[in-house]
Image (cartoon, rainbow, N blue to C red):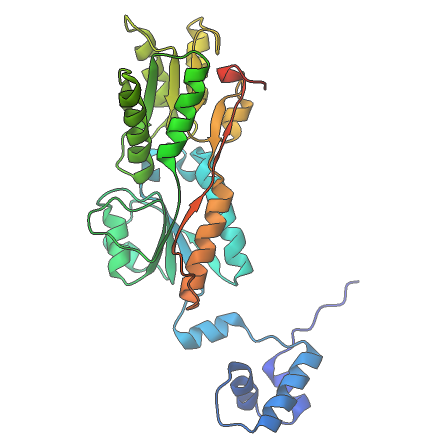
Length: 339
């Protein structure tokens, strides 16, 4: 039979040290008018007994909840929500890992809540994943005075937040374009999500700059934030008189349905069409053939964002409040690489 573990409380320390519970509390919090000798005795007893004050009690005294929130405004448009996009699941897990290390709880904030419901959420700060322009929910949360760290810059004019963790999406797009062009592609289509967020806009900027520098025709298709919509768009592109010889998908998970739809049409990937993705994830490796993608390091993005937010909340914010993570191109069979 397992012996239950006894939790050491302030009362145990007070009894062993021969002081009041208030004196123990003042000692552990660095408050009160106590002699150095009394503080030393209480600290020695606390260390001997293995006493650690509850973080929740300290936060209650300080008027903090001890929780941070994770918010992404456009997930209501995705049939399976966050679970439907591997990038955001990995980001959430990374953020939760660091929150736990820093003694914080993490709340996944559902989207589509009314302003009153948002105002009732008890968190000390927010990680906002890929904010979209003029998002009403983020406006309400910001007006509550919450500390906000964004993943990607907020495209809303005049928006200013406490910190930001981002990747260089413009560079990533041009890296993908250089790769498929080196594999022989000349008519390259870009399928992007029809939302105004930094990642969608910077991918588009990178695509347009690349095409302009080479005199290539632009082929940009906007689709809803739904990976299955990418397959329908791919078929429409292939039905054109001058179909593309490469498709780059900007939406998480969108490239896998494209490969499936192309194969159902009787075409081969990569022999007849090169397919690549701006976002890596499990669906890209599970596809047959596996799909060339950009590894955006979503778990690390989540960890960095939560760590930055926790540091700001603790009053120990780093000098650089905008952090840019390195990404990498993973070449797979969908563009002629090895599985």
